[in-house]
Structure formats: C-alpha cells, structure tokens
Length: 495
Image (cartoon, rainbow, N blue to C red; front, side, top):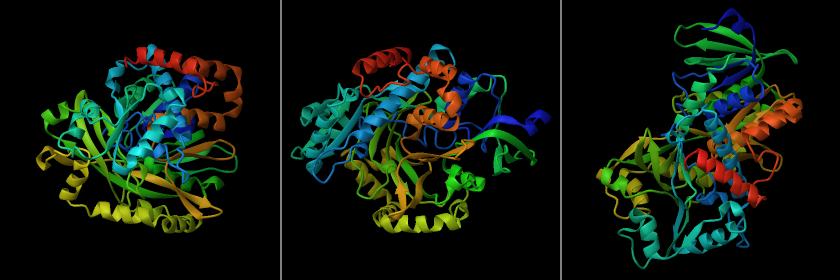
C-alpha cells in the first residue's frame, strides 16, 4: 500500500520487475544512494515473464554459438560485428554481477550462473559456412579458445546425444567454446530485487498494474496504478519513468504519447520447448548446442539442444518452436495486439508484414506442427530421440519491434531497442534477444541518454569504473583488459 508521501512523488518509477528494471534500479542506487524508487509489477512475483528460466533461453548470450549473429554476405564473407558487440556486452554484465557478488549484494553465484560449453553444430552445406565463421571469429580475442572440428570421433566426445545414431556418411562440423555459461535470469533477477528493496527509499509493489501514463508540458509524469488485490486505483508522480515490462512495454509507451513513440508497433511471437523427462538422457548431455535457424524464422527460434540448470537441477530442452498469439505477455490478453494499433503505426505494421511474408509462412507452419513433426525436428539434432522421453512446455512470449522506415515504410527489427523522450524523462525497452544477457550495457546506454549531466560527472564516472572495470574502454579491442577482467569475473562468479 502507498503512504501519503509515496502517493505524491518518487524520483524514479520502474514498471515491470524483470532483469532490466532490477539492473537499472541497482545501478541508480549505487550511483545515487539518495534516489527514491517505486517499482510496479502486475504479477505476484518478480521475473515471472521474459526473465523466468522457463521463458528465457538462459544462454548467457555471448555470441559463441548463436549463428544468427554472424551472417554471411553475398560475397561469402562473414560479418562478425554483431557477435563482437554482444560478446563484449556480456563481459560487461559479468563484471557488474561480480561487483555485486564481492559486496554480498548477490550471494552464491552458482545459483544463477554456471559454466556450460557453447557449441554450434551444422551438417552438409553449412559446414563450409561454420569453418569460415570460425576463422573470422579468430581475428577477435573475445573468441580465443574456440575449437573447431569436423571429426566425428571428436564430436562424439563433445556431444554424444547429437552424434549417436547419426549417418556416418553425413558431413558434420561443430565449434566448442568452454567459456560458455548458463544463466538463470529468474533467480538472478529475484536476488537483485531482494537486495534492492532493502535500500532506503525503495518500494516494490506486486499485483499492481500501471493503467495510464501522462503529464503536462515538461512537468512530472503522472501514473495511474491499480492495486489488483484491493481493487484500489491510485496516482503517483515521478521525475523519471522506465518501462521495462517486456512485451507489455509497447502499449505503455504508446500511452505516454511522446513523439518518439509514433510509428512503433509490435509483432508477438510465442514459443514452446520440448522438455526431456528421462534422467538418463539428461545426464548424457552437458552443452548448449545451437544450429542454424530456418529461412525466415525469428532469432528466438534458432534451434538448440540445451542443458539448463533450473532450481539446482539439470534440465534438457530442445526448441523453441515458434508460434503466434495476439498476447504481448505470456499472462497477457488476446486483445493486446489489437489495442496496440494506432493511426501512426498501422502503415509501418502493414508494410513490415508485406516485407516478411516468409516469416508469416514459417509461423503458420510452426503453429500447425504435429507432435511427430516436432520430434522430427529434434531428431535432426538427436537422431535417437523417442517421443516418450519428451513433453511439451510453453515458453515465453516475445514482441518483435516494428518501426517506421522512410524507404521500406515499415521494418521488423530482431533485437532490443530503447525508445526515450527527447528530455530523457521517460524510456522504454522494446524487443527481445539478446536482451537479458546484455542488460547492463543497455542500461548504461539508457543512463547516458536520460541522465547526461550526471553520467558525465566525476562522481558517476568514478563509481561506474569501480563497478565495471572496463567502463570507458574497449574490451573488444584490448586483449590484456579482456584477459584481466575475465580472470576476475570467473574467479568471483566461480566459473
């Protein structure tokens, strides 16, 4: 419940209790201890949507194994720029988590991060691509230590489930990166909030839904918030608002009415996993094995045979299988998509649809898949798979960004994007992968954009360098810096 003071004002309001809000909240309290923060979450627990372990790939996206981050150009060259950026961003996240761990803000790092080898696996015509990708990545020290092999005996040792029962005549190849991790972002997020709410001036409100956001010219933001337990509606003012509500961010951003939100739409994509229920099979696989996505499929649908550590137990998942729902959240409404339509975003959404007909076709095919067809997809990665060892599990809901484009009319973006007001008083995070893994870098960019004077000031700069040793330097260009920070983070995080 609100006190009278809280009804009137907060310095910062965070909407959504996921990894992004947790990261931003801790960064702000470390940088500005006197700041007051109110956090609102529509569900009864933190990290129950996109950040939850069953809803999130948990790869600790570092571009070691995700082939969609290294596209091949028409001339045959491999573009590694996105992979390098993501790998560097994940190193930044690890540094912040190590800082929090050293100060006992996070305890028992094994509860949220584990060492798991990251592998890419391909066959037939894609073998040449993987070799070129490997060679290209070796030009950057972030990927040193990666191994490449086309030897079936070697691959049998790396990933026995993938090789058992496979045609010996099939040409196969894989890369392996032992520095890979599995991250339980649900546990990490809840641990961060547990500490955050101990700070003075911080309050977290579960079962509270933000219904409206508006303001007078250049005044504070006014939020209308409904308490779903007691049925009361209250109002709160804030100098700064962050909308980190996963798929629910777009509708709230549109309600804010800021000019920067015009032209933005969202395309929801749902997903499912096949979850292994045979403990003997689970114990035989200890890796994240990623393949190549089907043509026209969204990045969240890249197939992977994935070892996960969830609630201290080893799990094995395959998927995800893409689907379509008009919900923007797993626990959202079927009216989410229709209610997001505005005069300013209808044209971009229509044009994006026209430009992405292969994606629409792919999603229709995925929705219509039979259990036998899902098993057939699994058998490409695990030839000896049998139906009785697997059950279907619903994965998370993602909303891909659609935005206005002068040339195309509208484009569908696969990734994350921060949209903020010109005066920096409100910002929203839209999009999906690789969001959680790069949360710290994303929030640092947001702080620079929305708090430019403080960000450039000596106090914040010195504190940021303390929290993130590579801050202000290029870890992707400085091999010594990379090795030093990795040695520290891996020691502290027990990797």
